[in-house]
Length: 289
Length: 278
Image (cartoon, rainbow over all chains, first blue to last red; front, top):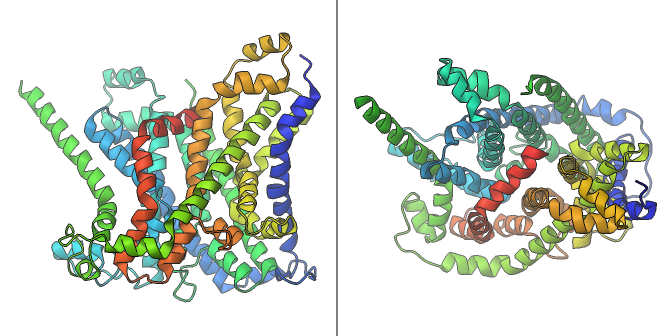
């Protein structure tokens, strides 16, 4: 078939134009700025080579932000994928209780992160917080979620996971629905018990879902901003800052756009590297039938 | 017989346990709803109970101070226009890129997917410069363009995956009848893409509606805030007045939750259709 070139051009052009101007060009600019000392305001700036990166790798704030970001990523990725997969298998039945709980788990996923963060920052107060009120009912002493930065970060990770879990459960359930029931029945006939069936049949066949979900959850965890911003603002003294928080602060509060671009670039490289590693691991395990 | 009875009992326990998970999961929602109707003193004294002296004062006060109607107007405008733009530009581009088997299109396909791993925060700082040069800063149109660039890769990825599963024969016969690509796409292919459009709409709609960082810096406050930045701003002034916080939280979330509960079936099947096929 010989297609009208003009038509094809008109169909494809708007998308690629917007994408180029508002994604590829800014991406290139981010690379470029990371080698400059641009402050975001003055029209003049100098190329300073690798100075931003050298400063970055000597910056204690950056290492702390890296640590915080990785803790959040590890905890949320584990909850999304382990708890998410287990819940999907557990709720994968047709009865009212299961469909109620499935909907219940998805409700927070439609809420905005800001709203979720406000609800939980009330709940996790040391005095008058609901979590401590509940603990008090069963005779446990009040727990101070702000006692150490680590504790706060762990709690924030759980909150993020509460917020997002629904989407991951739904994607896992979607993958489960593609598994033919004959396979599980055949395994049962062959004498495999529930646990064996899960690890030997269900799990390998869930790999496509695991691929999608782990990519979504790793990228989501690494770029965390909203919940931390609302709950601690990155404090005390920057102790709970994520990489995104740090770079946004450097860009807009300290007007160090060049340095901020370098930080963001490191984040971007991390996401790409982790996703590629992760893809090579799960893609290999995807089975065909 | 007793084996059957045991099985039934296990099944009942399992159902109860399932319900328990659901209720525990919704506990923070219960806290937000019940406390939004309590006066401040009652929240402090009995945070767990149902409201004893239910009042609408919190809502009245929140409604006055946060200007919620205009926040909704801004969020609706931005979400609808961004999703419509993304659906339009990426479905058409996906069609050309995936159906024409030539070198340019193969290159364009790879080029389009470059952005899939770029988190929007990477392009935020430079975009502020590009947008001010184009006089789009602090305008809904600027945020619209930003989303168009930021999520183009994700939506074109969904569409190309879906179009690949649709046989070309329909398009071929229309072509033989003398139809051009534009009318083939909009008359024949686009209606068939409905499940994928549903997935893209739900996913993008959720992301854009709930976005916080980008509207905060790109839109600012001059052209009206979105729900997320508006609520953040309204609450920021009085974080410890929890009665107002919860009223604001409820004003921002109730319509979204109701929309989700009403469209639940479509919501789930929409998400699933694209996710499994794509």
